Image (cartoon, rainbow, N blue to C red; front, top):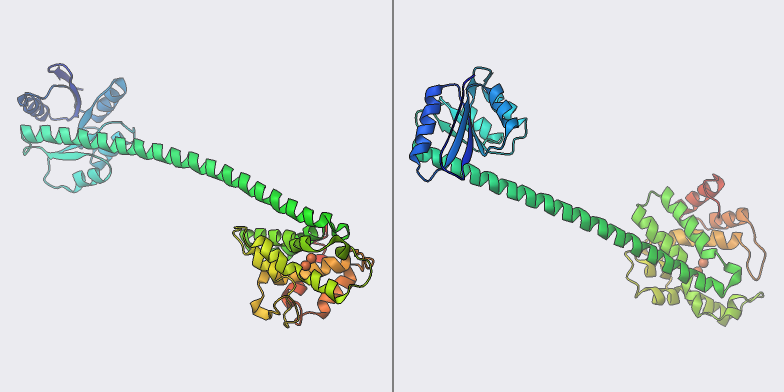
Length: 357
Ligand SMILES: [Fe+2]
Ligand SMILES: [Fe+2]
């Protein structure tokens, strides 16, 4: 092992040379000395293992590395050095004019290369200066990117917490609105909640996206919100409704639409609610829409709403039970209700995959 050490001036640049040719090391020192404004300390080793051991000993600024050493050869020499994750630039020294190897080292992270025999004092000083500048710039950019990534991560977390809070608040508001309507109509308490549950179960079978299912559920919870406009005595009337009272009840789809249209949901909740009493053959209300004119969510609600209403107790009659409810939608299949949705509804209820909680 040959270890040489020399230094000039104060504020020195600490250079490590790993080079097995003492003549080349001598030349490098001489050339650096010629640069009078260049204050440096230089340590040199003639084999890679000793050079690597020196790295662990102390602080250095730059490494000049010969790729052909007694204990390592070719690009592997650079790779072994790089594997240590050294925090400083490396300049490759090559005796050959074949640039394939130094170019490979550049691609893998070396800062520069010098061809021995063609190096001048100023070229050497320039290569060292530029390498150090580029290295420092790269590190500043790396630090900046890390800081930016951390900031983005923090902000994303904050945003997701805010979104979570807003979603909870929205669900709270929807639930409060839903209960407010049902407070005036005790016979249908929980009706919207149960319709929302069944609609969701049907939507899941239809493989709707989670986002769309959330919209469907909210529309289910609010589909009769327009009943807030209907006098409680009409809602709770045990006997037959007069034509005027019936027209009043029917106005709840439009009233629901008007209440909800100013709410900026990410789903067309107001329109879904508007259409929940439309029927495929155009016999529904308020606009007599047909088939494809009716939103899928409204067609789902139509089936879920009918099934829940028939199966449950009403002021003017006792609960008719689930079998009767399913028979009614089965009979209206294809004419009033979407056939596929009816089949799915029967499947989820009969298959015991669903029951009203
Ligand atoms: Fe309704
Ligand atoms: Fe309803």
